[in-house]
Structure formats: C-alpha cells, structure tokens
Image (cartoon, rainbow, N blue to C red; front, side):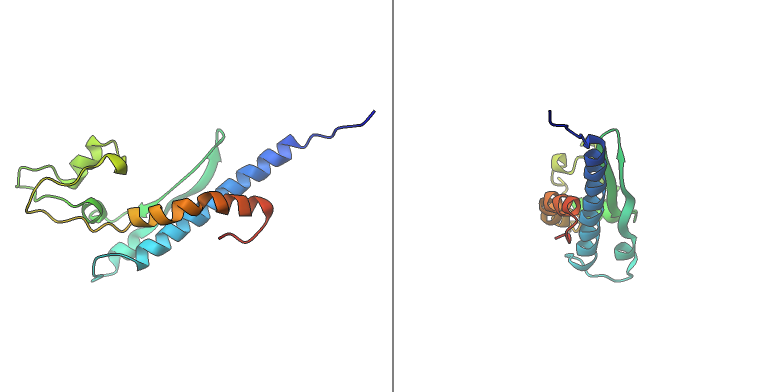
Length: 146
C-alpha cells in the first residue's frame, strides 16, 4: 500500500508568505510610480515624501491586506478634485465619505469653479494591481518578482 504524506500546512504557509511578499511588492511599485509619475508640478516635495506604504502587508484570518497612499492632508483634494469651502458644493472629503471610501463610487465634482482632479494614486493602482497575481505567483515559486 502506498503512503501519502500531506504537506497542507506547509503549502498554506508558503502561499500566505507569497501573498504578503507580492502585496508589498505591488504597493511598493504603486508608491514609486505615484512619486515619479504625476500630473502636478512638485513645489515642496511634501506630497511625494508623504506617499508611502502606510501599513505593510499582513496576513490575518486567511486574508492579506496592506495600505499605501499619501498621508498629506491635501492628497485627496488632488486625487479627486475639490470645491471651495464657501461654494456650497461638497468638498472632496465629503464626497469620499459618501462613497464609503470606495474610489470607484466617487463621482466627479459638481462645482464648475473647483480644483480639478489631478490623480496620482489611482493611475498607479490601475497599472500595478494587474501585476499583483503574477507577483504572488513568482514569490510562491521563489522567482524574481515582475
């Protein structure tokens, strides 16, 4: 009779580690792109310097998550555009809160005399998130990450 040795726990741990590594690599690529490829003119360096991995990837309850972006208080205004406080139109933070933070649900600003959007985070997510699966797979196989 043939003997079967099951390494399920090892495979699960390896998969989780690859997912963490691939997620960190994807967030890092997003940060690098957002700092170097943006539609606004850098004047002080603060916004670029504040763009970073905010929470490194971690695994918990069979989920891997991390957070990246900018901690500058005006980053959202640049990303989605905003209205003047006295305009009577909702500002960027109000529109983001109404959408529950889901960037896909945040509509364009309605104030015609607003600060137009100059997105720098979302375009990088659109580019780099497509590579996430390949990065996790490469990490699992012990290969260089794309």
